[in-house]
Image (cartoon, rainbow, N blue to C red; front, side, top):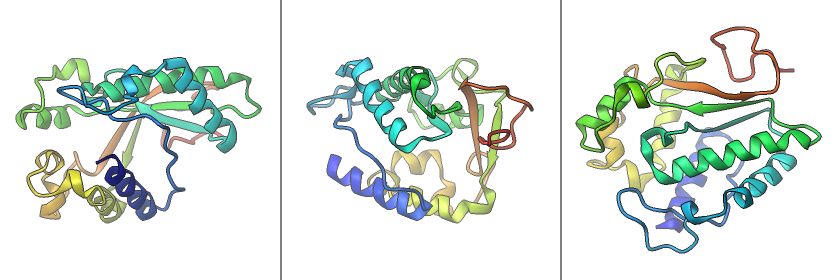
Amino acid sequence: VPALRELELQKACQILGTQAPRFLEYHDSGFRKPSALAKRLVEADVLAVAREIRAVIAEIQPQVLLTFDPRGYYAHPDHIATHTMTNAAFFSSASLAQPPQRMFYIMPSKAMLERFNQAGFGNFDLDEFALPDPILTVDTSSVLEKKRAAIFAHQSQSHLGSGIDKLLPELHAQTSSRVFSEERFALGGTRGVIATYPLETMFAGLE
């Protein structure tokens, strides 16, 4: 499964036109029950992983980082660990020649969390987990086919009857909705002034 998931992510990145993904040597920790894999992310040293992330930051020199929100979108242990480790990397990267200027958290809307609850994936408190007032909302309606193809690249998770299919029935039905055509972000950190609120793009105001 880990090798399959790597191939699926590589294919999704190709579809989106991004650089090839970098993989750190940590494995899935499991959601409802612990996985049997070695080097589970939740058991890794937070600062050690943060140093690995910071090394990639030093090489690529991104202006913006994107990670999970403090609750891991839907309380997945690996998402929460990724949030903590990426935050540590962002704030410790101040000593780099070109540190990232902003960090954003991807967060679910109340409508998405309602779908999680209806699909039986949890019983999430909408006020606790949802983002009511995002600093950035990205309209993806103009690139829905590319977005749909990138999600379908994860075939082990997006087939008919899968969890993603239950959460996003628009995928196979070839339809759209606000839930499917919108991404919402909170601001996790900044090294400069945010001149306008809400932001129009992640890079608004940056050189």
